[in-house]
Amino acid sequence: MTKNQNKTLETSADVDAYLLQIEDETKRLDCLKIKEMMERIVGAPAKMWGTSIIGFGTYHYKYESGREGDFMRSGFAARKANIVLYIMSGFSDYDELLEKIGKYKTGKSCLYIKRLSDIDESILEEMVTKSVQFMAQKYPE
Image 1 (cartoon, rainbow, N blue to C red):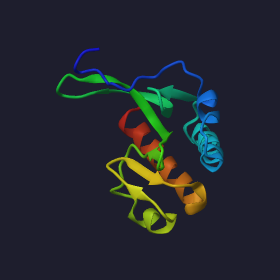
Image 2 (cartoon, rainbow, N blue to C red):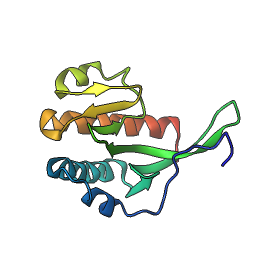
Image 3 (cartoon, rainbow, N blue to C red):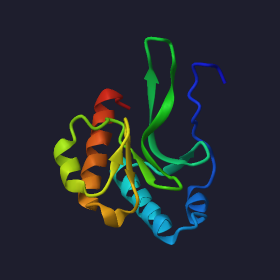
């Protein structure tokens, strides 16, 4: 791996086997539901990225620095404290949706939720859809 290569790469690991080993039943069921939702929205099957990220679709990026690679168009991870949803577009255009979604925290492109029952799932679907549309415009296939 060169210093310009992405550390998180798509693997051939079994997504369902990974999800089924999540001990917390609520989190496991929520992740299975999120997987189905993202497969439907992105139109691509779930793939493991690294050891713990479930990604959907891919895009190729190339920065002015020369760094380039492939990454997922959307994805999520089941972490110990939260489910992390990767909203690749970031949140600058999501104020109205974030006001209505429920209990969450954000990072640069990460939406952290405890469980689906804490949020409005239709708002989450809208956010993921908008993010996937943003990625399709920025990085056409």
